[in-house]
Image (cartoon, rainbow, N blue to C red):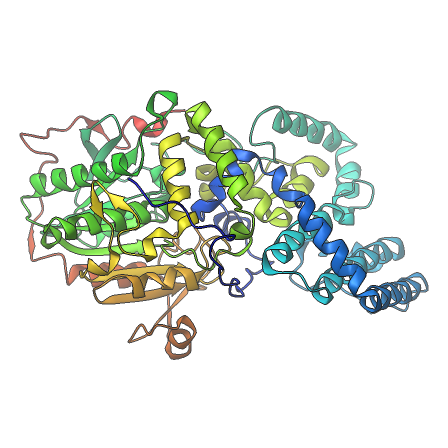
Length: 588
């Protein structure tokens, strides 16, 4: 894979990011984690450099802030005056400041009933509002503004009184209830977490689940094993199946079984139950020996998987579904097939929480300056890979209030084990990324090269996404902080075929792991996909339930006739090599 020299903000102006909807502050731990376990591949820059580098704005950004504050003395004085007056009202008990009803940090009645705790909480909120208001008042360009706001968010969240042992009522109650044993347990957990990456509070116990026993248990078999991946064919659950197989391209971050979590919550299980022949790529967890594997390596793997699926099923076509970074690879592979005259082998394609246009990069793009890019790629080149634990740490600090301090209170102050959620277990089961793939993803993202035909290549073919004229199904999460739904929507405009766009509830992963039966689940669809995502949203209507049945019905119309389900998995040429979930999924 090659790209032209990446454009940078110094070379070409980039649009300021669109405002993004905030996730519900009172969402479940599962939903909160799901919003941050995966995301824009541009965070790979921070993962290589270390997340703490992001928390301290560059000197030039701090200088810009200082200069801007100096130019607005009235704003500084006004905010300071308002803060002093509010603190005075807090001191005498006349302040009406209250936390958001959805802010779980201050949900305990003691924050309202205890005068000391109430004043401490109100002072913290007042100071945070003043600081944010000051940033609103000064005139910073969008990059410096994003950097300052990110750092400010981390500082404000870290200084919350709910993080202080002798101020948090939950911690104080735990001391009484356990006779102080919570402190001993909490210190042990803290030491354990600090000594091993990612150095953030554990979101799940390491023995909470077992892959192959209570996760990744949909029946199937490995029918192909290469140095890069294993291919799993799932056993049919219906008497007849659609003739065209579905090849799933999972993310290259973490293990494939985000698509096959606990029974009843497994995407694959649902697809099989709907009569589809499903083949899953399980990526190998690479190490320094595989440093040179890049986008071309993974693109060829997708082609190899599809060829195997078609050979086993006897179909002349295959359908595809790509998740997040897997969707990026899939889009480039489809462009290669279009360039080589083989796109007729593709029956349909689906892209889930996949960004192909990075023009609205938000906080991540604001921090991806050329120096950071060079440093990140050089670090992974020397090591041969990007450590998945570092990536997990970066994701946690993207939403520290939910993904760091929430578990700080539960694990360390209260001394409790973290709740057992399957998504959180998957999130902790990190994988490495080869230096070659890390480099290629960053080049594609920084240059935004998929938006311009021919700027990137896949297996020697110039990538032109508009040449992909097959029907596509595109999904996004309305509260996705990492792949904003508007950016995912742009995929419908970049591809050449007819697209159906579905906007799911929740964030990045929770929008995907959205099984039928959840009474809170909804998704939005519209009859057309105009260029402007806001126009699409205005015309969309809401459907109750999960998008999974909607997708399987859409795919069923494009996956050929129904034929008798095969009695055996694999074929004479590709015999069964072992039961699912295979061997690569256990690589550490």
